[in-house]
Structures are given as C-alpha cells and as structure tokens.
Length: 336
Length: 272
Ligand SMILES: Nc1ncnc2c1ncn2[C@@H]1O[C@H](COP(=O)(O)OP(=O)(O)OP(=O)(O)O)[C@@H](O)[C@H]1O
Ligand SMILES: [Mg+2]
Image 1: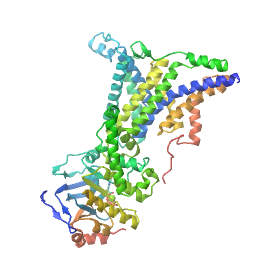
Image 2: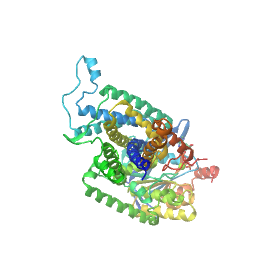
Image 3: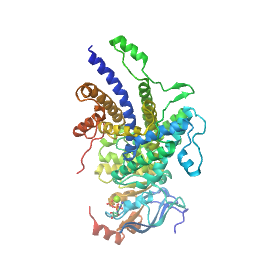
Image 4: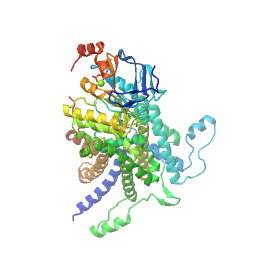
C-alpha cells in the first residue's frame, strides 16, 4: 500500500471525528428548527455558555463576581470549593433548562406567528446577549476544562491512542495518530443521538414533539401545549450544546472563539438539510472528512494550506446549487 | 333559559340529556369583519347538533370559538354547567373536546396509526422521567392506549392503511383518519368541521354511517358543520342555521326546513 494512501486513511479518520463535533452542533440547530421553524443562530453561543457555566460551577467560581464586587465593593471570586463533575454537569443542565424557559417566556412567546426572518434576527440578538451574559457571569479569560467523572478517575482522556498507534503500525508500518478525546467524543455523540431518537420515538413527550414538528394546529387539537414543547426542545438543544461545549472545551480550551463553531454548522446544515437529524450527522461527517482530505491532498501541497477555513463553505455552496433541500431535507416544491 | 336537567326524546327514540355546552351571546370580529354576531345556542348530551349556512356564514368561526382556537370579543362559553375561562386550544382539548378541521390537519409525516395514537396523548399519564424509570408501567400504558387506537381503526374500517404514511392517502381517507384521531381521545364532545366536504357520494354515505354509529355506540355528543342540506336532515337532531354571522334558525330539521328566513337565505345566496 502506498504511503499516500495510508496517510489519507489517517486523515479520513481524523476528519470523521472532527465531523462528529460539527454534527453535534448542527443537531442542536435541527432540533429547534424542526419543532418551531426558528433558525437558532445562538446554538454555538449556547455551547460556549454551557461550557463556561460548567467550568465556573466546577471551580466554585462566584457568578457575576466582577459586577458584584464593583457594586458592593466586595472582593468575591471563589466559593472555595470544587464540585464533582457529575454534580456540576447536573447543575449546568439545570441552568440550560432555565435558559430554555427564559428564551421561550421572554422572547419567542411574543413572536409567535412572525416571519422567519424576524425569528432569525431575534436569535442573533440572543446570541450576542448570551455572549455578554457569559462574559459577565464567568469572565472572559480562557479556561481549561478537565472533566473527571469520579473524583480522580473517569477523566476525559487526552493524547494519542496507543492501541490504534500500535495496531496500525503493525499493519502499515506507520502508526496512526488518533486523539483519545476524539474517540470519546464520537462515542458520546453516538450515545446522545441514540438517546434522542429513542426519546422521540418511544416517549409521550417525544411523540408530542414529533407532532408539533409536523403540524401546529393539529398538535393543539390533540391537547399538546406548544409552549411546553418549545421549552423542551430548547432544553434538548441546550443539552446537546453542553455536550458539544464539553468536547470542544476539553480539546481547545473554553474561550469565546468556541461560538464560531456555530458557523461551521451552517455548511453542515446546507448539506444535510435543516430538518433532518440523520442529515446533520452525515453532513457533519462529510464536511469533517472533506475539509481534512482537501487540505491534505490539494490545500497543503498546492494552495499554501489553511483551506479548512473556507473549504466547507465552498462545498456547501456547490451542493446548494445542485440540491437545495440538502441530502435528506424535504423536497422544496414551489406553490403556485 | 333551558334547564340543564331536562332533556328530550328524539323521533327515533334516543334519549337526549342535559346541556353539555352552551354558547351565550357570542360575538366575534376580525378587524372590521363581524364573523359572528350575538349568537346563542346549546348542545345536549348525546345529540347530533348541526350548524349549517351558506359560505362565509361564520360556521367554522363558531367551531373555532368552541374549541378555543378563536377568542370571542363578547359572550361566554359554558361547558358542563360552568362558564369556561379563556383557554388555549390545547387546554380545551384536555377538557375532552376533540375536533377535526375543514382543511384537514393531520401529521402528514406519520403513519395512520401514529396519528391516531396522538389522539391518546391527553390520556397518557406517565411523563418522560417515570417512563425511563418504570419501563414496565410505561409499556403497559402504551399497550392499553394502542389497543384503544386499534379498536377505533377497526371501527372506522381503516385497518388496511394503518401503517401507511398519511401524506400518501387520498382526500377521503384523510378525512376518516382525522375522525379516528379525534375519536381516539374518547371525547365528551366531538366537533366536526365539514366531515364530508369534497367526498363522492359513496364516501359521504360511509361517513354519515360512521357519525351515526359513533353517536349510537359510544354515546358521543357531536356538533358538526355541513353544507349538504340533505345530509344534515338525515343526521342531525337539531340544527342551528347561520347567515352572515347571525343565527337565523334553530330547531329540528323539519322546523328549520320550513322556516321562511332559512329558505330565503339558502335560495338567495346558494353558491354551490
Ligand atoms: N382567521 C381569520 N381572519 C380573518 N377573517 C376571518 C378569519 N376566519 C374567518 N374569517 C372571516 O369570517 C367570516 C366567516 O368565515 P367562516 O370561515 O367562519 O365561514 P364558514 O361559514 O365556515 O364558511 P365556509 O362554508 O366557506 O367554510 C368570513 O368573512 C371570513 O373571511
Ligand atoms: Mg367553514
């Protein structure tokens, strides 16, 4: 087997795993879009907010410390405790549910029946507002995220996976570099997707959620509260954001550039369609693999590299021209 | 004013009970358009009550007021002896009032069975957390609800299409599935907006038979809107006639048929 081919295989594997994270963010978009027709620009910021909240809670940071100190002349920074990760994650989920409720109660409840573009603008407002709140609550410095589920053990693994390295060396005479964190992220994302599908297929709330995604009038007529479902769906999206936030945060630190990953979800959605969960996953994987392979085969040798910044968008654009509804999206039929 | 306790016996010998729902002086406006002007009538336990009238008379608007989709500017809706506070449509549904729509509102992406199952949602007790914790109980509930849904599917003779996605069904069958979903809620009051519109003669006959059977076998109180005078006369115990948002007649089919104002309205503005 040629060296080039073996390298390409490694690149593909790494691309797949990068794609998992794109898919995770895209999944949050799809959930909200399906149930309410809102394109939630704030999904990436929600991941940032969730990750910052998790770090803050784990480290016993006092929320809004700067604001409190400036107002009352105090000097608070830390509660002086460290919370176990599991408890901190549970509390963060609570915060995300509260956020979902607030978003519905104070913003979208007042915008029912508005044009999609107005709803979209509202989510842009929400994105910047939330970014500001995150800054005010937890400060803007870059934080590291080390999640250990059981005290000192069950930590998110970092670094090269030795097994894969050894095995591939045995096969090809070249050891693949696959990050343990990426492998974990892939497994967690897979579990999350299976759980979401089970939820929507087999629970009362899941059935109600599918009903709302299909037809609002009909959903009302069978006794479903749209408000409840929308809070639920924003909560789910918040939970997905938390998972994405943990994985990205563990990988590259919790910092404000995290919210930019939301932009990578855009081409993913153009590929996968805005209404399809399988689409979000496959779209994410295609973008992940596509940009890594392109960089490897064409970008780095011929174009001076850094093509990962724009390749996804160009790919999505090409796709948009030939299949506007995405891979799995519903067919767009012009009403005449 | 009618006493809620008194009832009457129909020509075919069915016992009609007390008042289930009463509309009191309902007025509904859309901007400058008065869709309903000061209309009152009641619906009694076990009866089939029709609302008829020419196009744009305000029939659907009335049904939307009854099911909470529209909020009238004036008047009160009484349900089971109590004035109903302003409610969201889903709250009305949870009170035991099921409905169908003139333009059909089904979950197009779901199968017939899944659609009918959504009609059971108001009867499902277990929430998502208990569902995760007590899997057995959730499964038992699912099975019980499933049985009721299947029974209704059999009753309406749509077994053959139970797994078919609704989007692929012809219009007449969609109407029937919508009725099935409403019935699955085991409603105390069933509201049907033109259940036979757009059907051919045979489909209309089937639908008429189903409506009569539902009323007969489950004792369900039914209010229905219909254009076809002949169908209405056959089906209903009492009829409200609307024209330009006003009530111009109310009584048994025979009484209404001989009412001069009703005859004029139908002759004068008959469109179809
Ligand atoms: N949501 C709405 N907004 C504005 N006007 C409405 C609305 N719903 C109904 N109307 C108006 O109220 C009037 C009565 O309409 P409605 O649909 O109740 O009549 P209908 O008796 O059901 O007619 P049809 O036999 O055609 O179904 C019409 O003038 C209609 O345009
Ligand atoms: Mg109508």
